[in-house]
Length: 237
Image 1 (cartoon, rainbow, N blue to C red):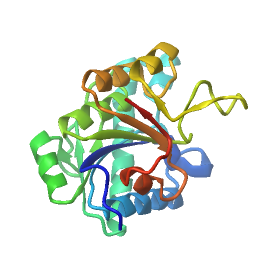
Image 2: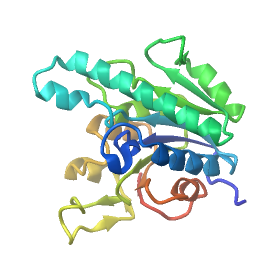
Image 3: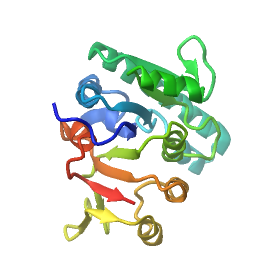
């Protein structure tokens, strides 16, 4: 098998994507496919950290827009990411991938507390580490949590796997003439407000010179292709 282009990565997975075609909750067939894709990438020898969203279960921003207290809504969203983290852990271990879940909100019965040095040690031992509960603070998205964790574990790239095969100048779902970028700068993403990740996450990556690779999650094998350095998606650097 071709060796990986990176030693260590942080993979950001969409929580909404876990719902599959059913639109909400967790699709067992979808999460099994994701686990098989991560397992394929793991076999290349790359060290993998994962941050997963919770939009398939609860979206704090949407709830706060309807009148719920924003902090309470965000904490509920963080708990949703923990549910997804445990589901992904189970699927990965069925795929024979050793996995640990660490959460920014302590819940000792189901996961380890987030400890940076312990997380790095797990990665060095070949375990996939899933980071749940975002940053542990309200008002921050899981995009920002992914950028933060990527920096903390010294990842070489932040890979954001979504429902779209890269970054476009406008929404390709709504505009048939949308143009895809192969490469783009952080400043152009910010200036064009391209919605790759939230502005805080992009700014954090820019300040720390961490590349962002955006690619399609729904194509089987894409995670391994990204890890091997094949040309897919869009790179922000």
